[in-house]
Amino acid sequence: MQLYIHVPWHQCLTIQSHKPSTYTMGEVNPSCILSEEHKPKHVITEGEGIPLIDLSPITNREGLSADPNKAVEDLAAKIGEACRTWGFFSVINHGVPLGIRRRIMEVAREFFALPVEEKKKVSREDHNTAGFHNDEHSKDFKDWKEVYDFYVNDGMLMPASHELDDPEIVPWFTPWPENLPEFRETCEEYGRACEKLFFNLLELVSLSLGLPPERLHGYFENQASFARLNYYPPCPKPELVLGTGGHKDPSALTVLAQEDVEGLDVLRKSDGAWVRVKPVPDSFVINVGDVLQVWSNDLYESVEHRAEVNAETERYSIPIFFHPSHDVTMKPLDESVDEQSPAKYPEYKAGKWLNLRMYNNYKKHGFYMRMTDYKVAA
Image 1 (cartoon, rainbow, N blue to C red):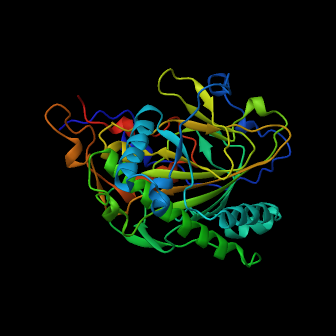
Image 2 (image 1 turned 180 degrees about the vertical axis):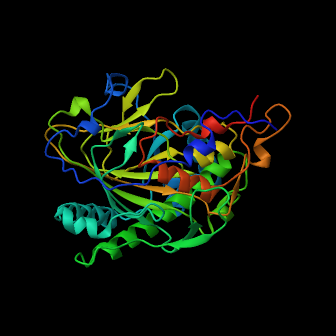
């Protein structure tokens, strides 16, 4: 079987080591200034946006007046349609307590308000990527943001490196700040609450693909999921930069909390236009990631998205990237493959792909990694 590979694996694996940035965000760092083709262009802010879906049929079955099984089937159909047409949707009545959602936004503010020297005490490392960092690159340009990542399954097992011939497996732990006593507890509680939402969504996705509701659960027994606290400071020249450049997520599904400050844009599949995602109070934004694209054999697509910044107001967002266990062999599901639709992706180990994606997010190397670059030749 021959692979069509846009970016050879060996090019991905020979990148110079990460060096933390010492730049602060008082001015426009030249490394953040986008080339003309990547600068934010016209964004559609009115009219049809991503679907808004009420999850009550699965989070409040007792309160339904109609047939609960039929209601869940209809809900799964809506999820499937959103995954096919947009790759993005928002959910309400999702079951995540509003109190923990608000508390994690509060502790995110507290953390990013610390002096940079304090934040750097919990800095990320090349191959244990949780912690603080402000040197992420999208398409070779430094993002205008600060970030703190933590693992939903702290101590999760992962490959020791992205190198394909390195068999070592090691635990990854989150470096927690010591001077914010409620920070860790709040993050862990939030992760558990969003995990319940994720498994509800995973059941609906399975049903939408014609699979048993728990068909995909086993892939997440030792999940390699991680959460991210994003802080986007005001920028004096927002037209020159992006908070996060255009990218696709390596996850199965991503669950994103955002406040009322706009900034998230989605590349609409139907016409390639950038569409602003309007914040809906107490909702979550859900998007398809690379893993689900592979499992569905391209029926559901991981869609490019980005975050813009503005000159007046800081913005916070919190995505959780739900990813399978490191040792899961990724390939299109048997149920997604037949003679008319053969497998479009080769087999790969979930942990190696995630490790490589996370490692390369901090490098300037002349290419942008996409799962579609590794498709099987037609």
